[in-house]
Image (cartoon, rainbow, N blue to C red; front, side):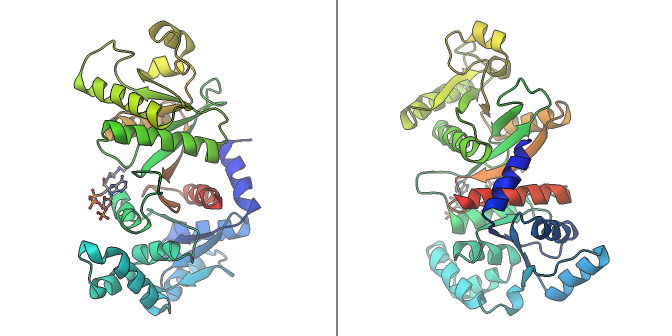
Length: 331
Ligand SMILES: CC(C)(COP(=O)(O)OP(=O)(O)OC[C@H]1O[C@@H](n2cnc3c(N)ncnc32)[C@H](O)[C@@H]1OP(=O)(O)O)[C@@H](O)C(=O)NCCC(=O)NCCS
């Protein structure tokens, strides 16, 4: 069974309420209908009911039984505005600003999650990553034990010799443009946690990637990764993590054995932590486009699950992301 099928089965075992702020967007309406029909989640669509129903009727999609919430007419708006004001008043947000913000479906959706009226949120078919991330970072904030939010990309590769039966987890490919060594260490730990909880990895093996393996090159960029390895070992002494190492040393047993002899990770890594967002974002796209991997992305480190879509997403991508969000919410 594929990773995503396993995730879907888990989502069905304890159905969660997932809010979709882009409620009148065509792919989102279709995805909500599938989610409801297949029992993967209880979707909540945000938007004007007449707009959403019009889209559903154009698509001939059944949205009966799906909750629709309109910020313009919701009885919750004023409670959400007060809660938002309390959270952001020390950042210069006035009561008036808070009222205006909750009229925005993205902020309204985030407040639903914050106030416990939804278990998670998925957005990004229309909004950019930054537009989706900023309210989540400002309001939901990070888990107490995590300093930063980052992302895991679950790469289901055709070559089943890689990682865990072809599944590799990449990080960070979306959030942190240029992490410090400490932030890189936190990304590694959060990714190992995601791999365990969402993908069922029994033994996360983390490679901290670089263009150098074990000091083969000397450069400040290499030093940053070496420092991240040291910090991660202190923060999570039981985690199998090693580096710095090159991509091939992480994945190919013979290369790992020759470039990093004795490493517990080299040649058999199932988690690959890239040194910055340029490398991570380019790396996952190469794996997807040339390597033929299927790719599924989640955010990690947030106090409650909120996930981003690509604006080019398909209906299936939305369904998959909601299922992963629902599983994150189960924890
Ligand atoms: C994540 C991102 C949206 C933050 O945006 P930003 O303009 O730097 O936002 P700010 O600096 O105003 O931060 C907003 C809040 O989020 C917090 N924050 C920013 N990045 C954070 C992170 N990774 N983890 C936790 N909190 C974070 C800030 O501390 C700030 O909190 P505060 O307002 O309570 O003080 C930005 O780093 C970004 O755009 N990243 C790349 C996204 C992208 O385009 N990816 C490629 C997509 S394919």
